[in-house]
Length: 194
Image (cartoon, rainbow, N blue to C red; front, side, top):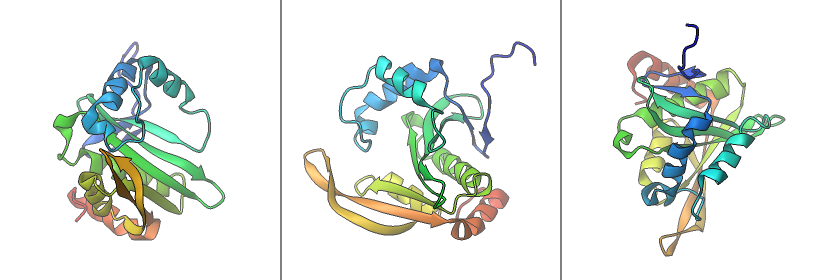
């Protein structure tokens, strides 16, 4: 439709759409990054300004090693961010990371839908061989979410991250396309990963 202000949808899942970020999203992302409940498991320990987030935004799409998309509800509410990072095109390996910044959307399966949709893109469009993910062991929600999506624990970096006054383990996950495909088929058919 001519003159529409609707944001472009890059990938469409069952519950969410994944789209490019826009400059208008910067204040929302800045709020997420500075929220103590979200920042606890992130890796940015210092306050972030809109100027810093604007600089982050301006680097999006600057190379073919990172794909970062906004997670949006089917009604168009921006709720998070998801990425494939550090893509190694020779080995065909990348890492995913996700953030649901709007707490009222936690625990509703939206992050799982975003991850499954992104994995479909990673394996079936980008032809990646393996996808990794790293999780702070104390982040139980993210830990369970990776296991639900089919990732396997590959190793633990003991006492690797300092969070809330103590060192915690950093768990490394990985999944191959052939491990993920049966889960994807079930998800497409039933909307459930298990």
